[in-house]
Length: 298
Image (cartoon, rainbow, N blue to C red):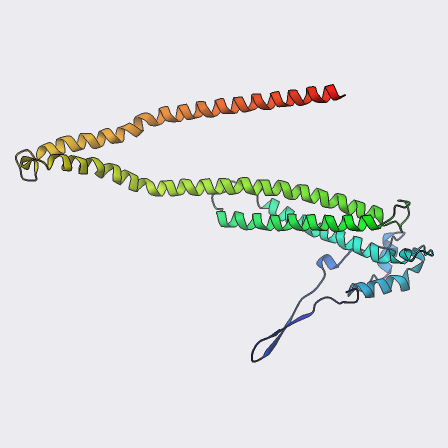
């Protein structure tokens, strides 16, 4: 795979014809960063960099133009420094790309006056993208760990020592993983907020049906109660009793929620405050216990 060039076209074959689609394979941010350490910016600008067409072409470029950067010894691994530096530079570019993706998702949560325009589907889609980035970060970190296991420690001050490069990459991936963990937790909380908001909207939609049911329930109960006697039927001498009983009954039923709602809200708030105080006391007690244990261990 070291001589493979970037993908340029895709051939799709069907039953009756073949289609060829061109693929734009320009490298992200113009490719990986230059691996040679120059004396200054003017020297770096005066030298044409690697072609970045394939790994093989780039390695050939560095062997042809910068052979003095190597410290070749009888160990054949000393000739792989250019390849290791290119791979490390690719990892840094990958870390920067992941950081940009996480920063964009983080930006979508900032500077918002309200989350009323968000939907659960939108949040779940971003949450799925975060999990994808999180999984890839774990895979990249394992790959870097494998590379570190194959590299021998050397003088960190020397340019040919690539172990320090991969250690820096490992630290960068750990930072990105922590950032993705925080964003996953944030989007999880946002999903709960959006879901609760939609539940409130649905509850407001059902409210007219509830009011309608509360209205007709006493009416149907009253009509069923007075239908046992013939004088209470429409047109009867005592039909007025139906209105005299049903209308006050409707008002009485509607007054119950209005009367008990403030009391119920007050009791709920007191219960929530009591639970919060108990939780804070338990947290403080657990912190004191941990401090005592650590003090005893010391």
